[in-house]
Length: 209
Image 1 (cartoon, one colour):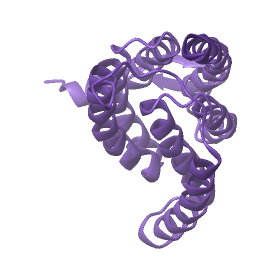
Image 2 (spheres, one colour):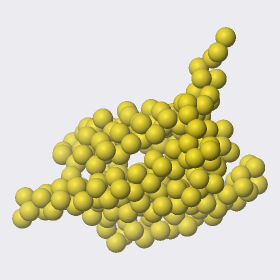
Image 3 (spheres, one colour):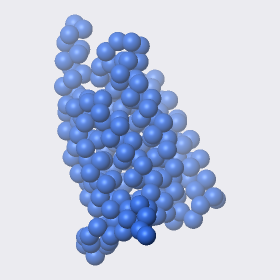
């Protein structure tokens, strides 16, 4: 009898000569919807994002992208935190879009360098990853961007765009054609999110004045 895992791993269709599994299709749909909801500052982006994370755990394990797979569990925990933060406003007041301060950028840069170095070494030693540095770089950028998303920092979109630009060729290299197309679309969606959040931030600044 066919199991759920068998069905998820089975081919939905073939694109550009590469088989596309049902779990990749689910990841595509939930991922695109999640970014649209984030851009609109909808709290429903968090549960949709969790569904996307679960799909990508299965997908990335099969593709040998171990850091990206493990990252999804971190995303799930961060999604719960983000869900609660957006609900309460962090300090029991409305959470609005703000700029990333110079001090925060310094902390993010330090965490980024340390994260890339540590994850690269870990993947090189403990896994069979053939792209340890790029896997580590996209993982670290995504974590930093998620922190910014949770706290509604406008510049989190720049980090997402940087990660997505690297993800596209990385997924093509792994024959995840539909996922590469998804992340190409993410770049456009992220630009839209950046524009929307910039407007929201400026509107909030005008109200404060």
